Image (cartoon, rainbow over all chains, first blue to last red; front, top):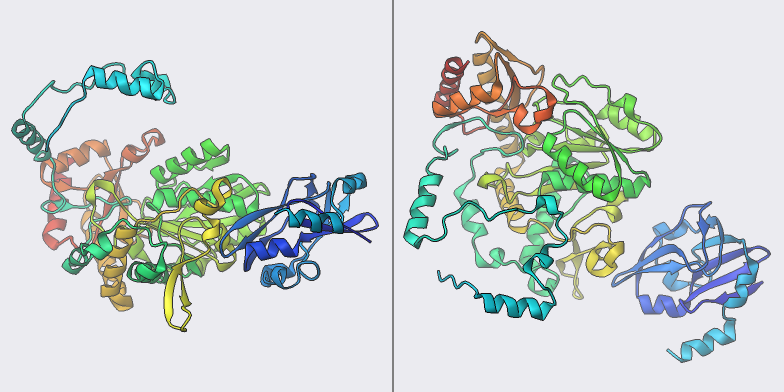
Length: 123
Length: 446
């Protein structure tokens, strides 16, 4: 189980060849109260850095970019009814989607926990 | 009024400032074949007095709806507007063009919008309505775009009973977006098989009731067929008062109800500004275009109103916005709301019954005129007559007798091949005298 971060504040938790993607605690805090999450359909092919989902808060709407390339195998449909979960538990129950990685080597371009924390200090 | 023309030197200075060699460079975006090749054929100069006289002479050639026997409809109807409406909408608090983004100073405007939305949702039997669109036709085009967003498909099927100009607006918008439109031929008898056209690529079916010929359509079967293929049904209306008497789109399975609200509270005004009504199911609210007002509570728990779900809109989502419309016909929808409030549910129903009764009365009177055939089996306040000869000519002859007898269908759809159809609207303003004048003018014009 490895966890990696993007500079756009997405995380990916990898288990085998499937990664669970969501937004970080920093991101949910910056967004404010999340009121809506628009998720991709299962089966959709995502490109690294491409738009994967949309998260709306009371003050903004932001794209969520996929940190890796792959195919969506599952989405967290709970978020439709309870988008606030993204604020309450971003790293846990507030996950967005699970993606089957097509190019696992792409993980090397992402930040590990320590590097991400350092990156946050620069913001 | 002072009119101070620019000198050539000033024009030259301005062109230099913006980096254009010639004034034509500023119009480079307009296709060449659409540009005038010569100045308009207008006199070089006139005094203010001369201009006023010339324009008054021109306007005197109009036959005013207020003084003639008036049976013109097709999306713009002459109804009585209570004096209260005009008086109230002219209050400066309402007349302002200010967008009510700051709820702390816009509670009045926001509450009126909220009431408007509530009325539209109730009329259409839908869950949620927006704060209005420009008019019925642009609203219909927006509804098609919305259906495309929801279904992720890009083909719309337009009924042959849809107002041809509404179809034109949909086709224009779709053409620019690269979307497909299947337009069915004009359907005078309301017997088209639109269900047969629905396939797995269909995003939406657009059907109007009462249709442009005045026929009432049962949308339920079309809705079921559309849903079975994963498509949406868009129900259109041009005469909102019909909803006081006939089954609303929401009870017939429509996913989006859209139409013109001019009939309530708004004058003919040469065709605009009008007020588009737009309502949908709660599950589609995030894909709905336009402004949306919601009810909430303030920090002390007191009821208040705010613009809501604004993250869909272009001032926040820019190019990803649900729609490029983030405005509404504020004053027109206020007029609508005031008139609706004065009518109430019972009043609207009575008004609708009166409209229908007047249409029945005229239909009975024209039934026996040789060379005139009533096309409709059903109608609300508007029906279609087939006349011997050219409908446009008949209408011109009737106008010479001070009767504006309706709209020749050929005027809306010159290519349809139907040049013997007249669409006749009847509202509460038509008296027995008007109907007698209609009959005698029609007899004398065939």
